[in-house]
Image (cartoon, rainbow, N blue to C red; front, side, top):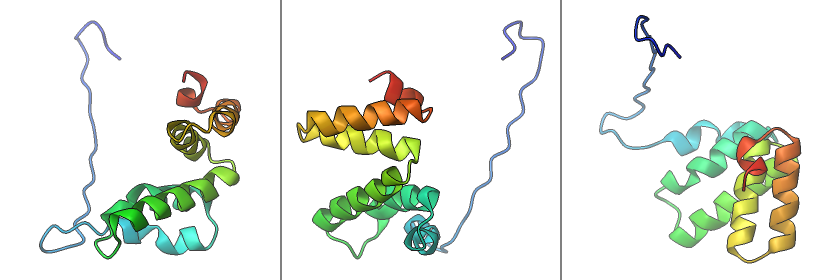
Length: 114
């Protein structure tokens, strides 16, 4: 970060358009590798599954928790954090705290400061 104001900052943004009508298909991008067991893909699929118009709101919530949980079980730190927050929201304090501690040990900053 240049605090003097004398420098320049450059960013590169890459946008993908996978639909002529700007429909969201991001939930499809990581489905196959999530099903193959890749923890990052499971996290991404769980994060985007709510975009699937074929699922009911109940099914979206269930699928998100399922895939985030699978990713967390494999040690993906951000998935552990999000799964912990869900557990705490359900008042499952023991499970939530355990997952926050695991996320912190795995290097997730959010898990360390909740």
